[in-house]
Length: 250
Image (tube, rainbow, N blue to C red; front, side):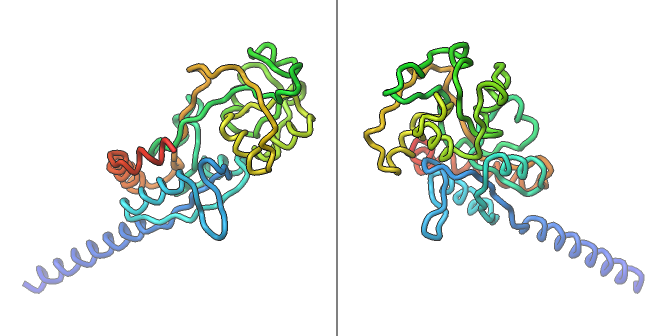
Protein backbone atom coordinates (compact mmCIF):
# COMPACT_ATOMS: atom_id res chain seq x y z
CA UNK A 1 0.00 0.00 0.00
CA UNK A 2 2.83 2.39 0.93
CA UNK A 3 4.55 1.59 -2.39
CA UNK A 4 1.34 2.42 -4.30
CA UNK A 5 0.95 5.79 -2.56
CA UNK A 6 4.61 6.67 -3.16
CA UNK A 7 4.26 5.61 -6.80
CA UNK A 8 1.15 7.78 -7.26
CA UNK A 9 2.87 10.74 -5.64
CA UNK A 10 5.83 10.24 -7.96
CA UNK A 11 3.55 10.18 -11.03
CA UNK A 12 1.74 13.30 -9.84
CA UNK A 13 5.02 15.15 -9.32
CA UNK A 14 6.22 14.20 -12.82
CA UNK A 15 2.89 15.23 -14.35
CA UNK A 16 2.94 18.54 -12.49
CA UNK A 17 6.51 19.16 -13.63
CA UNK A 18 5.66 18.42 -17.27
CA UNK A 19 2.62 20.67 -17.11
CA UNK A 20 4.73 23.44 -15.64
CA UNK A 21 7.31 23.13 -18.44
CA UNK A 22 4.59 23.03 -21.12
CA UNK A 23 2.85 26.02 -19.61
CA UNK A 24 6.11 27.95 -19.46
CA UNK A 25 6.78 27.20 -23.16
CA UNK A 26 3.38 28.55 -24.20
CA UNK A 27 3.92 31.70 -22.11
CA UNK A 28 7.22 32.42 -23.87
CA UNK A 29 7.17 36.02 -25.04
CA UNK A 30 7.50 36.23 -28.79
CA UNK A 31 9.37 38.82 -30.81
CA UNK A 32 7.70 40.41 -33.85
CA UNK A 33 10.09 42.14 -36.26
CA UNK A 34 9.15 44.49 -39.09
CA UNK A 35 10.32 47.27 -41.37
CA UNK A 36 8.31 50.48 -40.89
CA UNK A 37 5.70 51.07 -43.59
CA UNK A 38 3.04 53.71 -42.96
CA UNK A 39 0.48 51.66 -44.89
CA UNK A 40 1.05 48.52 -42.83
CA UNK A 41 2.94 48.92 -39.55
CA UNK A 42 4.82 51.75 -37.87
CA UNK A 43 5.73 53.32 -34.51
CA UNK A 44 4.29 56.71 -33.59
CA UNK A 45 3.85 58.63 -30.32
CA UNK A 46 4.88 55.65 -28.22
CA UNK A 47 2.49 53.22 -29.94
CA UNK A 48 2.70 50.53 -32.59
CA UNK A 49 0.14 51.32 -35.28
CA UNK A 50 -1.19 50.13 -38.62
CA UNK A 51 -3.53 47.40 -39.91
CA UNK A 52 -0.86 44.67 -39.75
CA UNK A 53 -0.24 45.52 -36.10
CA UNK A 54 -3.97 45.31 -35.38
CA UNK A 55 -4.21 41.92 -37.09
CA UNK A 56 -1.20 40.68 -35.12
CA UNK A 57 -2.62 41.90 -31.80
CA UNK A 58 -6.01 40.26 -32.47
CA UNK A 59 -4.37 36.92 -33.28
CA UNK A 60 -2.09 37.07 -30.22
CA UNK A 61 -5.06 37.86 -27.98
CA UNK A 62 -7.04 34.93 -29.36
CA UNK A 63 -4.02 32.63 -28.97
CA UNK A 64 -3.33 33.97 -25.43
CA UNK A 65 0.22 34.87 -26.38
CA UNK A 66 2.30 38.04 -26.18
CA UNK A 67 4.87 39.56 -28.51
CA UNK A 68 7.23 42.51 -28.34
CA UNK A 69 7.39 44.45 -31.64
CA UNK A 70 10.76 45.69 -32.93
CA UNK A 71 11.19 47.83 -36.04
CA UNK A 72 14.44 47.50 -38.00
CA UNK A 73 15.81 47.57 -41.57
CA UNK A 74 14.18 44.89 -43.69
CA UNK A 75 17.34 42.81 -44.27
CA UNK A 76 17.95 42.53 -40.50
CA UNK A 77 14.29 41.78 -39.79
CA UNK A 78 14.28 39.00 -42.36
CA UNK A 79 17.52 37.44 -41.08
CA UNK A 80 16.31 37.61 -37.46
CA UNK A 81 13.00 35.93 -38.30
CA UNK A 82 14.66 33.30 -40.45
CA UNK A 83 17.19 32.22 -37.82
CA UNK A 84 15.76 32.95 -34.36
CA UNK A 85 13.00 30.81 -32.78
CA UNK A 86 9.80 32.45 -31.50
CA UNK A 87 10.16 35.32 -33.99
CA UNK A 88 7.25 36.65 -36.02
CA UNK A 89 7.72 38.89 -39.07
CA UNK A 90 5.40 41.54 -40.56
CA UNK A 91 4.50 41.99 -43.45
CA UNK A 92 6.35 39.60 -45.73
CA UNK A 93 5.54 38.72 -49.33
CA UNK A 94 5.21 34.95 -49.70
CA UNK A 95 7.52 33.62 -52.40
CA UNK A 96 8.63 30.10 -53.44
CA UNK A 97 12.14 30.85 -52.09
CA UNK A 98 10.74 31.71 -48.65
CA UNK A 99 8.03 29.06 -48.53
CA UNK A 100 9.86 26.41 -46.49
CA UNK A 101 11.83 28.79 -44.26
CA UNK A 102 8.80 29.96 -42.23
CA UNK A 103 5.44 28.92 -40.82
CA UNK A 104 2.79 31.12 -42.45
CA UNK A 105 0.15 32.57 -40.13
CA UNK A 106 -2.20 34.83 -42.13
CA UNK A 107 -2.47 37.31 -45.00
CA UNK A 108 -2.23 40.97 -44.03
CA UNK A 109 -2.21 42.94 -47.28
CA UNK A 110 -2.22 43.04 -51.05
CA UNK A 111 0.66 44.82 -52.73
CA UNK A 112 2.12 45.47 -56.16
CA UNK A 113 5.64 45.83 -57.51
CA UNK A 114 6.21 48.04 -60.54
CA UNK A 115 8.93 50.30 -61.95
CA UNK A 116 8.08 53.88 -60.94
CA UNK A 117 9.61 57.05 -62.36
CA UNK A 118 9.02 60.77 -61.92
CA UNK A 119 6.50 62.08 -64.43
CA UNK A 120 8.72 65.07 -65.21
CA UNK A 121 11.48 62.65 -66.29
CA UNK A 122 9.85 60.96 -69.33
CA UNK A 123 13.20 59.53 -70.37
CA UNK A 124 13.17 57.37 -67.21
CA UNK A 125 9.84 55.66 -67.92
CA UNK A 126 9.95 51.94 -68.78
CA UNK A 127 7.31 49.35 -69.54
CA UNK A 128 9.41 46.17 -69.47
CA UNK A 129 12.13 44.41 -67.51
CA UNK A 130 14.46 44.67 -70.49
CA UNK A 131 14.09 48.45 -70.68
CA UNK A 132 14.57 48.73 -66.91
CA UNK A 133 17.97 47.02 -67.17
CA UNK A 134 19.24 50.16 -68.92
CA UNK A 135 18.27 52.35 -65.95
CA UNK A 136 19.45 52.81 -62.36
CA UNK A 137 16.86 51.43 -59.94
CA UNK A 138 16.59 51.91 -56.18
CA UNK A 139 15.36 48.85 -54.29
CA UNK A 140 15.31 47.72 -50.65
CA UNK A 141 17.98 45.21 -49.69
CA UNK A 142 16.65 41.68 -49.12
CA UNK A 143 13.10 42.60 -50.12
CA UNK A 144 10.98 40.42 -52.39
CA UNK A 145 11.42 43.10 -55.05
CA UNK A 146 15.20 42.94 -54.73
CA UNK A 147 15.17 39.15 -55.05
CA UNK A 148 12.88 39.35 -58.09
CA UNK A 149 15.21 41.76 -59.86
CA UNK A 150 18.31 39.72 -59.05
CA UNK A 151 16.64 36.55 -60.36
CA UNK A 152 15.80 38.42 -63.58
CA UNK A 153 19.40 39.37 -64.26
CA UNK A 154 19.71 42.76 -62.53
CA UNK A 155 22.87 43.49 -60.56
CA UNK A 156 23.88 45.88 -57.79
CA UNK A 157 27.14 46.34 -59.72
CA UNK A 158 25.34 47.60 -62.81
CA UNK A 159 21.73 48.77 -62.47
CA UNK A 160 20.60 48.47 -58.84
CA UNK A 161 21.06 51.04 -56.07
CA UNK A 162 20.45 48.99 -52.93
CA UNK A 163 19.14 50.78 -49.82
CA UNK A 164 17.94 49.89 -46.32
CA UNK A 165 14.36 51.17 -46.55
CA UNK A 166 11.69 52.75 -48.75
CA UNK A 167 12.23 56.23 -47.26
CA UNK A 168 15.81 56.38 -48.56
CA UNK A 169 14.69 54.85 -51.84
CA UNK A 170 12.25 57.72 -52.33
CA UNK A 171 14.84 60.34 -51.37
CA UNK A 172 17.04 59.06 -54.20
CA UNK A 173 14.16 59.23 -56.67
CA UNK A 174 13.13 62.74 -55.60
CA UNK A 175 16.71 63.98 -55.92
CA UNK A 176 16.98 62.31 -59.35
CA UNK A 177 19.91 60.19 -58.25
CA UNK A 178 18.14 57.12 -59.61
CA UNK A 179 15.84 56.71 -62.62
CA UNK A 180 13.36 54.31 -61.04
CA UNK A 181 12.20 52.65 -57.85
CA UNK A 182 10.75 49.13 -57.75
CA UNK A 183 7.93 49.44 -55.24
CA UNK A 184 4.20 49.58 -54.57
CA UNK A 185 2.84 52.89 -55.98
CA UNK A 186 0.51 53.28 -52.97
CA UNK A 187 3.51 53.27 -50.64
CA UNK A 188 5.38 55.71 -52.89
CA UNK A 189 2.44 58.15 -52.91
CA UNK A 190 2.04 57.81 -49.15
CA UNK A 191 5.68 58.76 -48.59
CA UNK A 192 5.42 61.74 -50.96
CA UNK A 193 2.24 62.96 -49.26
CA UNK A 194 3.79 62.75 -45.79
CA UNK A 195 6.74 64.77 -47.06
CA UNK A 196 4.41 67.44 -48.39
CA UNK A 197 5.33 66.61 -51.99
CA UNK A 198 1.74 66.31 -53.20
CA UNK A 199 2.69 68.03 -56.45
CA UNK A 200 5.33 65.40 -57.26
CA UNK A 201 3.76 63.20 -59.92
CA UNK A 202 4.87 59.65 -60.61
CA UNK A 203 4.44 57.40 -63.61
CA UNK A 204 4.32 53.63 -64.05
CA UNK A 205 2.94 51.03 -66.42
CA UNK A 206 -0.65 49.93 -65.80
CA UNK A 207 -0.73 47.29 -63.08
CA UNK A 208 -1.23 43.73 -64.36
CA UNK A 209 -1.86 40.45 -62.46
CA UNK A 210 1.85 39.56 -62.58
CA UNK A 211 2.60 42.71 -60.57
CA UNK A 212 0.36 41.72 -57.67
CA UNK A 213 1.70 40.27 -54.42
CA UNK A 214 0.27 39.14 -51.06
CA UNK A 215 2.07 39.78 -47.79
CA UNK A 216 1.74 37.70 -44.63
CA UNK A 217 2.53 37.43 -40.97
CA UNK A 218 4.91 34.49 -40.63
CA UNK A 219 6.96 32.94 -37.83
CA UNK A 220 10.41 31.39 -37.76
CA UNK A 221 10.75 27.72 -38.60
CA UNK A 222 12.54 26.72 -35.33
CA UNK A 223 9.57 27.90 -33.24
CA UNK A 224 7.82 25.37 -30.97
CA UNK A 225 5.03 23.78 -33.02
CA UNK A 226 2.55 24.20 -30.17
CA UNK A 227 3.01 27.97 -30.45
CA UNK A 228 2.73 27.80 -34.24
CA UNK A 229 -0.50 25.79 -34.01
CA UNK A 230 -2.00 28.23 -31.51
CA UNK A 231 -1.26 31.17 -33.78
CA UNK A 232 -2.56 29.46 -36.91
CA UNK A 233 -5.77 28.35 -35.20
CA UNK A 234 -6.29 31.85 -33.80
CA UNK A 235 -5.70 33.29 -37.28
CA UNK A 236 -8.27 30.97 -38.88
CA UNK A 237 -10.81 32.15 -36.31
CA UNK A 238 -10.02 35.85 -36.74
CA UNK A 239 -10.12 35.56 -40.54
CA UNK A 240 -13.86 34.87 -40.30
CA UNK A 241 -14.58 38.26 -38.74
CA UNK A 242 -15.63 41.52 -40.41
CA UNK A 243 -12.78 43.26 -38.57
CA UNK A 244 -10.19 41.11 -40.34
CA UNK A 245 -11.69 41.85 -43.75
CA UNK A 246 -11.65 45.58 -42.98
CA UNK A 247 -8.02 45.51 -41.90
CA UNK A 248 -6.68 43.34 -44.72
CA UNK A 249 -8.33 45.56 -47.35
CA UNK A 250 -7.52 48.86 -45.64
